Length: 155
Length: 155
DNA sequence: TCTATACCCGACCATTATACTCGGGATTAT
DNA sequence: ATAATCCCGAGTATAATGGTCGGGTATAGA
Image (cartoon, each protein chain N blue to C red):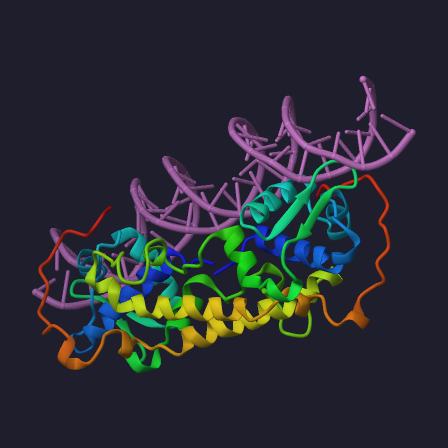
């Protein structure tokens, strides 16, 4: 019952992006430094986030990533599913939609509805929190300043 | 966000125990066969279930395991926690109680309350389902019959 | 046009967790 | 005595995780 580091990093990184919204794209190098996340690992994570349509990218100097949606439109659930795939606490729940994919073992199906309920609650919780809540009210946020260059965190 | 096979097996095995309640202990050999779970893996699982006080054991021929509580007193959450330890979707939530164990990274704490909420909902769901619900109404249950001997499933 | 900065991406690697297996030992009904 | 059963530490094969590496390609600015 654990989330991966990918998800933790992804959420934190997208918070950074959300806080940076108005100042153009934010480079992975900067996120890596400010969030203390391995730069190369971050690259992997952002490839998925881009493929899943959560962020856009700009190449070249002064490039980086930016949110494709408003912070209040991106839920933690979106991030989790982008980085870990569909949430399914047990294997027999993964893949296929509700009706099909029934277990071959009738006994297992006794417990199936528990796992379905669990899956639904997990999705509900994760879908109820959005990036704008995570970064807090505007008054809370540090004034944006253009960060310094180079570096990149490596554990 | 996955439960382990240990938990799946544990829940199924305890259902078997619950269905067998009145007929004395049930041996792992029988559970292994009827639930198609590796016998030796089941042994490991039941060691934990016993240490955590969910089942009692009887050694020797005609021995086996039995529930220490009524089926309506054992929740799926009890089983999960017995077999996987306390539920904590991210590491910084594991160990230590509410107040202490705060993250060293202030940024991470922005997201902390999401994971706490998630953890609490997961526990709620798992604690709301009990063994008696899983095995269904009495009318549903197959009449108990003394199972045949020997065997033990191995994948 | 050159160069540095950034994203892009497949492949690799080390560590850990998982899902078992193995080889015994202790207990007890028959 | 025998055989069934639980008890238990240690080993093992596979997969997932959390990275790293070595190259691309695009592009802003000198």
